[in-house]
Length: 453
Image (cartoon, rainbow, N blue to C red):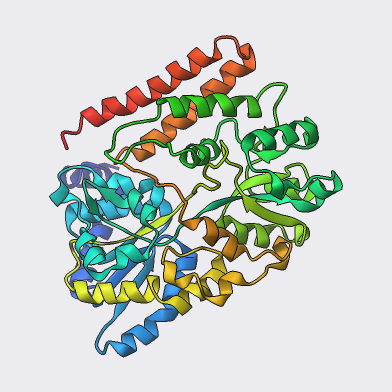
């Protein structure tokens, strides 16, 4: 017993933290020695690209062999990085100067977060000189550069346009004797919605009471949004107030025509059963609907969005992706050549449309026959042409490093306005909306003032 105590005391004197930490320490030393003797071989590549979209990854992967063959000695490293990790991983890489990709695709809602701080520290190259000198800027939909522009510099090449149309159950409306495609304004749409909506059984449109995505689309349609082109907050301007006042009664109270059933299998079931008769539909969503809701094939149709006033805009936008070239990129010419292959090849863009239904921002690609093909799912409509007809009218989305915060604040304001209207109706509602949106906007402005840049 005394011998055991002596041994235990001796171990405690040498390593007083206990057995478990000692084992971890030993394993760490062994691992370090092993890596020192057998270092991990670094992947050597001429160019690296991160993307968060599986469809993009698969499309670009097909083009790698021919590009590498046409550029002897060139090796491309294409990585797919989960969308939630792109922001943190890329920002960490840029700060540390380690494992920075040469090119990266960033989703539109987080792109603005990279434009904070001194312009020289952003870590993404200004593409303006190349875009202007090559004429590429004029060959693409101009408004799609807005989300990726900051302080007069363009940090991203747009991957898409994402016009929004209205998708609807054509067969159900026809049984009601309604040709919805003839509806031109939201006022007309709402009046029809009041006739066909049966609370708890059927709703005219998928509009959310708490998710800001739908009201955001409507704000963009009206020429509003979160920020103006100079980065000033406009979330509390008259247009935003009027839009909120118009929207809330449509999802709350006795004249409600909208409901939100979320996505996934619930959305599938709601569309199949006619619980939801229409929804805001950007180009990319048509492919998801075709895949997820096959039972309504031939019963669906698309139409331009109703406008808010006669002669107004009949589309909006939802979602997007930019491709940026980092300051870390040493071979700029090679990067530009690869960008031209994956973003500017007319035939590849046509193939990509067949796979994704996404309209490219390159206008010269639009006359390809694929965009005029009729789709049986969508009542034999040429959906490519329908979206293209609206592409040049897609509104700009002006961004800011604080766009993520602004989106959250709009969601909070929407929920608050819904709760107020549910309890009080029109009584004091105008004043409440104006004050609530001002509070949301002032919160963003307060955060903006902390950044001297």
